[in-house]
Image 1: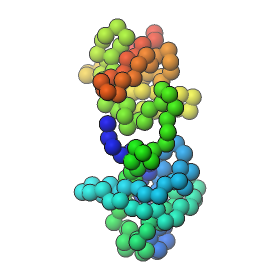
Image 2 (image 1 turned 45 degrees about the vertical axis):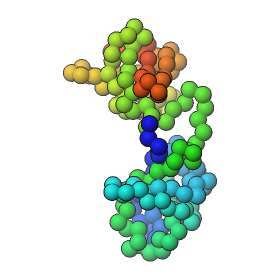
Image 3 (image 1 turned 90 degrees about the horizontal axis):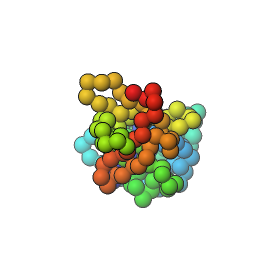
Length: 168
């Protein structure tokens, strides 16, 4: 499991005073209001940044970081992911999981058949859909509902799936 989770991606600068536009990759963009510190993944290192100001514009979050006061300071970080520690992540309900923790899980049927690995999670509105990649065969799409998902075991890196008729 990763120790940090992505909550957004810097898309561009905003104005000339060091603000950035962030596309939120979290379900609730309002959570940025509660964050004090985030980490910027530059590809070479993770920078710890203190949030000075949060605003909202359309579907974006505008962030101002402490000690980044002009466009030249921040422009090089376009397209960089913004991360939070698990301690700062939203609290999950029972049987809820972070997508980052589901990706890569070994998917097995409740009959013991190896189905492949979770490669993506589609958020459809009604319920999530797990995409299982398997060798040589087309992807298996499994709705994340109680009737299909029998067990998620992050410690064993495994998810047990009951394949309803027609899911193959």
